[in-house]
Length: 360
Image (cartoon, rainbow, N blue to C red; front, side, top):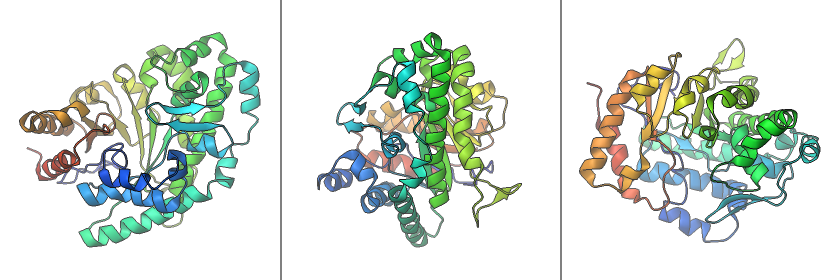
């Protein structure tokens, strides 16, 4: 939390995107007891246990809430399932102006009205983190997250995963008004989902724009970035007892992350966030030179190095840590999520190396 707010601790903090889940044998054993992925996300006991598994095993400095970016869309009534080996699949793609007009009539407030299980899972998780933190002698925050409007729109328009997100990119130009309505609605839905987690106890929030790099910079600034900025607003509007505030508004560190975003890093950093997640394609010192804001940087070891020989992996970790000194503070992470076939012992070793490293 200190690092996200701009202070540089002596020990670099580390957590991993997708640290909770499929790479851990204890996760696979728990999930084998039955139920779908989305059912697991909405089961407070299971979601909290899965969230804590990597904290116990790897000794990372933060937990990331076990959930999925499509959960708020499930909450408001859309037909969506997460298909093994494929990802989110919607029963009815949303592609025309008429379909979008019908969709945006759904009240985003349903996220709050139907989000009791999410709030319960967050509350249960923060209690478990407090107990784990007492054993370790340090506070362990929970990072909440939500999907950015463009990435959610990309899934909705295609009806599922896509290699090029051509449907969403085409809609930006073929029907700008319908596109604007769609991402404005998604911004409120996903923003409420992030705020729900923070209100229930999450200490920070990250917005994932996994497919933002598919959009050219001009289109990103015009048709994507405003909705991403709006998605953070429900968190900024919170007033939470006991949470540090600025002008009466909860001071919750916010992280903006995308994939393939080297050409738009300055834009992503421009919407008042505290930290910028950088994927593995751009070194952190280069990323710092591209942005005007003095932000904390998060990242960005290439996940491929988790499968490399020990010497190559350790050199890669060291290079990321050194490049991170260009920023005001650095939160070590991968440049994307933990791959499913990762050896958990390798992740534990990365954490150990990061914790032992000291700024030259």
